[in-house]
Structure formats: structure tokens, C-alpha cells
Image (cartoon, rainbow, N blue to C red):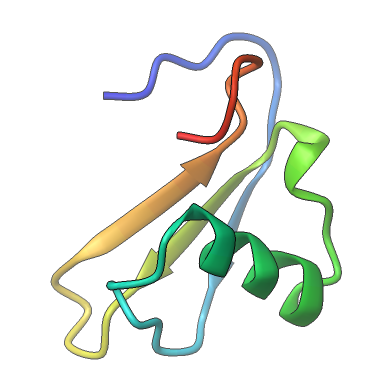
Length: 65
């Protein structure tokens, strides 16, 4: 569970994502494909090919989760 405080935006990455990617791999997708900064505090949603699994990447102030 992610407890978010304050205001933030959620960005959905629409392309199929390899769910084996780590924080670093997903951060690279955010920087290269979405041209966004992972340190902005926004949430980023990634889904697998069948769209039945998802990962959310978020900077909570202490690190990426």
C-alpha cells in the first residue's frame, strides 16, 4: 500500500512493460520515454502485456517505492 500525502499526478505508461524491471529500469523508462523526472513526486503506472499485473513507481521522500 502506498500512502501518499499532498498533491501529485499519475502518469500511465501505455506501452507493454517487462515486469521484471527494477526501480532503475522503470526510472529509465520514465526519463527516456515520458521525458519526466522521477524525483518530481508523481506516480507512474506500468502494466504487463495482458494488463492483469501492474507496478507503480513513486518517490515517497525517502526513496523510490
